[in-house]
Amino acid sequence: MNDRELLAQCEVDTYRASGPGGQKRNKTSSAVRVRHPPSGLIVIAEESRSQHENRVKALKRLKQAFFLKLREPITLEMVAECAEIKAVRTRAGRIEVGRKDVRFWPVVGIVLDVLEATEARVSDAGQSLGVTTGHLIDFLEVEPKMWEQVNQMRLRFGHKTLKTGG
Image (cartoon, rainbow, N blue to C red; front, side, top):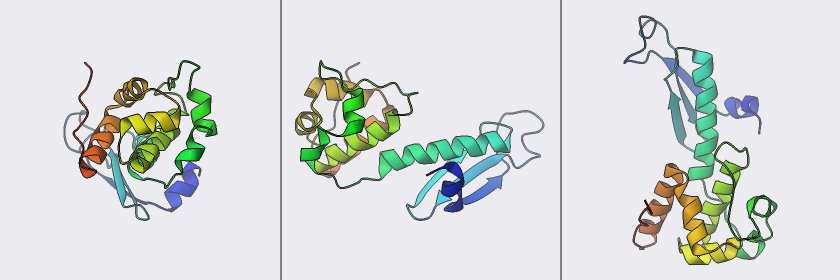
C-alpha cells in the first residue's frame, strides 16, 4: 500500500515538541504522531523542525513497525522457495541484504514470521530459510530492533535470550 492509502487508515496528530532545536522548536507544531487503529501501532517523529519531514519519517517508522511487530501465519514448507528470501540468500547460505535496501524490512518480516512458526528455535528457523544457524544469528544482529523482537519472542516461548556476538 502506498503512503496515501496508509495515511487514510491512520490518525495523525501534530504537536509542539520540547527539547533542543532553536527558537522555532517551541513555536510550531512540527512533531508528528501517527496512530494506526487497525494494528494498534503508534509511532512518532519529532527530530526535524519540518512537519513534512517528520510525517515522512513517521510513516517510514510505521512501515518498519508492521514488519517488526505484526506476525503472519506461515507454512514452513514454502519458506525456502519464497521469492523474497531467494532474492537475498547467497549460495553460501547467508541472508545478505543491506538495511537501506528496500527488500530489507520485508525480509525481516518473513524471518520473524518463520521464527514465530518455529517457536523461536533459531536452528529450525535457519533450516526452513535455507541458512545456517550462525548465519541467521548474524542477520538478526544487524538490526537492534529485530534482535529485541527475537529475544521477546524467545522469552514468550520459554527459551533463553540470545547473546550478541560482540
